[in-house]
Length: 362
Figure 1 (cartoon, one colour):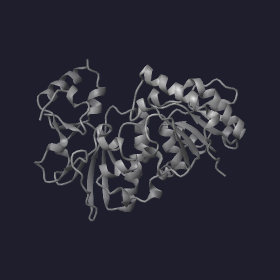
Figure 2 (cartoon, helix red, strand yellow):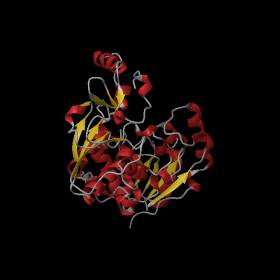
Figure 3 (cartoon, one colour):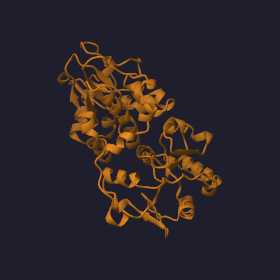
């Protein structure tokens, strides 16, 4: 099976190019098309790229749950090589790493080797380096297939956003299945990202160590999931009126009771630090919701395009609000002006004063 570079962009898995290197479609999509390396790679792929999961001439299995379900054998010492573990965005990574942490704790004889995309955003990679000591070795693609011991299993979870079950399963259950684990095996208590509490994070700046605050996090990785600019002041008014605490957040909001944390959040560790110490949070459908669950921060999460139970089912301190718009159902990403206008309309209709607030932590 061969194809051009463009034809692989939505392939549910990872590729092996003719030169024997494992390559992530995400990296191919993000390569500079004018660079000599990219032009050379295009030629290599045109001549014979193959799906990693289609290679059967090695003793160790190559698993890809998008094509065939499987169960990972866990009854003996095992080194498992996981390609694209656990994605290229921060929210998915927080959830997916919960599965890997649980696996390592429950099966200490298991060794994990993670293969990460070369063009993944740095702020996402920072999370993996914070977590690495508790998970396993991290390697970066492309990687020679021949350098992976032939008798050790490979799990391919490349391009999982294009797997049909990613849109229909709770994310934590999806990652369990992608790893060959029955989701029922993983205790519910381990599905709320509590592994984050074990990270070595910086202390709050001195001025905030004795000053309680609440968080407002309206941004998201795509415009269709953001809390619109037009109602952000109304949210800040509501939070200030309810808690009489400073409202901090990661956005440009000019409001007398709001503090923009972006100048004080230079990396992923500081982003997590601010969430960890919040009394409560209101957030768009973003990584902040999954981080808050890990730290037990009471949260109201606003969803515009997806059933909240696919994302926050196992978060006991999270109240979800679904601003249901039929035309937006199931959209993972969009900057379409029409889609953003629909979010604006429903957000004005469901005004912040009508939506529930989280109960602050005691």
